[in-house]
Length: 137
Image (cartoon, rainbow, N blue to C red; front, side, top):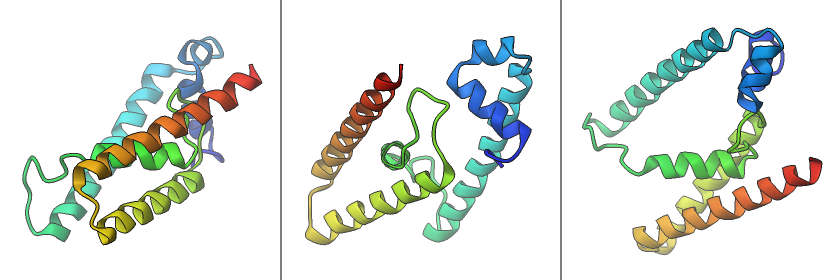
């Protein structure tokens, strides 16, 4: 949807530079509302799947998973500044972070050190992302 529809290209344009997208004729407010609507639907589906998998629904169930999500998409090539990324790259990042999480758990690494490693991975991935896009401009 993101690469092959007009709405998807609008989403990329807004993520890259909302002011430039507005000047080029994109209704930024409407499209942002659509982004948040799609995100809310997907969050609801993910929450339902997680609750059904764990057998409980608690406000603290997924506490700490936001770091995993940020690390996975950053490793997958999604730019933290917006406007760059692909679903296939994101899936590779999710798979990679899943392997890293599984490997550290299998090796018995303490959860605090696991968080430290994930934070380091995010810092390194953002550094390379910034370096890559600084070269272009």
